[in-house]
Image 1 (cartoon, rainbow, N blue to C red):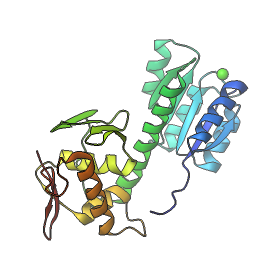
Image 2 (cartoon, protein in one colour):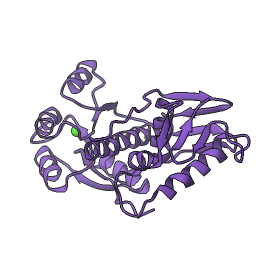
Image 3 (cartoon, rainbow, N blue to C red):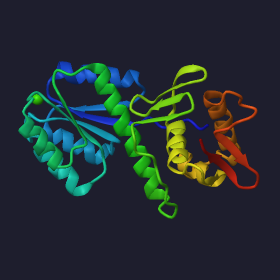
Length: 243
Ligand code: CA
């Protein structure tokens, strides 16, 4: 696999101790982080840096969070925005959602929950990006939060699978491929289609990459990986997931 460029997160927050805490924790998770401490700086950095996700406070000097949100949404409907607000007011929440905010957390928030939400929003963004590039191919993607087959349980919220080796954390590619298999249960999927869905048209990946993932899935989910019953090969076609 190629080295993946760090995802960029812009944090627009004027309370320095909160902003610093967020930056530290997101950096530990492997994200590139920039801070803006007022609305004008926030909009400037959004335009010049082109982040993958914005974490936005509502009460800000110069330009408030809602005005920032409106400005950004006029230009970009898809960039994920997570609002952090000191006000637990449901009116604010509704207003935010109406302006096209993707997620909302009231301060003080739980760090683990915050990181989980950030992770999900970033994955959503990655998926939109791929969708744009591959408009020719239409993928049906499973949209549920959980899925069970055999003795296996997949939790898409926490990106975990409870399967043969026990509890495992699924990678972004594994999640995309599993969702694709699930929504196309019983239908053969070609290696090319799986490759495009999981990796886009990036260089350095071949259909062999897909085969390696299937080997991994069989180790996770099949009682006997050498005699699979869920992830089945179809000669000259690709793979079928069924149960
Ligand atoms: Ca504030």
